[in-house]
Length: 452
Image (cartoon, rainbow, N blue to C red; front, top):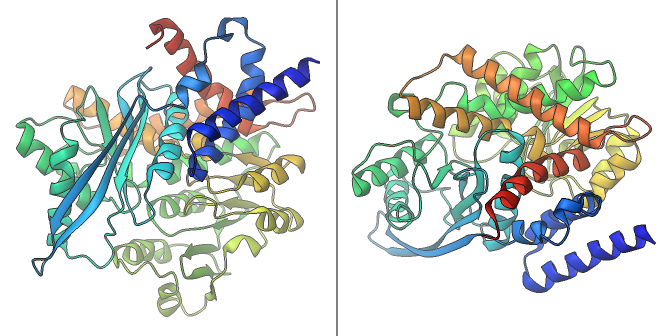
């Protein structure tokens, strides 16, 4: 009867969320994934009874949507839509990236802000959850066009953010160049030099290791996962998707730990390099990213020994560890089946929600070590938190100090996920562990602060 009641609670909760947020598939997917693990936990804790904590966490504290008019190099006026989702500030100022991409909409940003709340909680740093962006497409735009767009975007957004309120960072389509333009406009309008954005250049308040941080953190987390079965990266074959900063950081750190990454991917298909992406090939990924054409195929022109598979994803390649590092829902049930059949030991998400719910369930059913992005890719936002600290104390830490703190944070996140996710047979359900561990800190803060 108790199981029935919990199942019914999950169904009732999901039905309410669906009714309240129609036509928002990404957001609904993220909330459902959390609800199925957290609602049974809430039901077993009397202090949470009747407090509607998950309902409150699923509703943004503030949703800001605004017009962004800008002028291109030919003098033509364009109008884009800007967003900032301020999801939850129970444990600190809103913190989360800004994404410039044609696919940006309310559903995508609400899903990312919801995930960010749990991810930031897991880092143990005092950061709430938020996310923002625009449907602006930086591809094919000149530097001056991107500058004018960033200035127009920040002219409105600066009213809603600040170092003690909301501290955005970069995300897809928003790198060091865009952060510089955004920061410059904020400083000009507000007449203050503060740590309001992270991912800044080293010359004006940025942190060492930040570009590599997400990828490094993912590998540190995967290293801890492998330790639970008495294994490590030495001699392991690793498949990676994407070829941006995250994939670059992953590949660098895997090589350092003795493993070999053999794939990258783009919207056009994937690269398989049987000799491994090592040495100057890793450096070339930065050139590939900077070229702005978003084509993985160019890798083969530089390194003709590699193979390009047009229109395909890298999950058909036999590997020990798979690290999806591109975008949401890039790994589906069919991909999961192939990975399991090929003997994958560990799947560690480096992107936000890159695996579908069906794929995740398949990994869990087959007892594959699987970590959701909210836990394993938290190294990026953790290092943003470290950048905020450095800005507050007006000091820069060395690469070694930042990297050491990052590794400690990832080991701590892994321990929290393992403690909450360990099942009776010894298998660690990291999805359950991450959701509950992330939920608890936010829930305790919300309870302490009353119904606000």
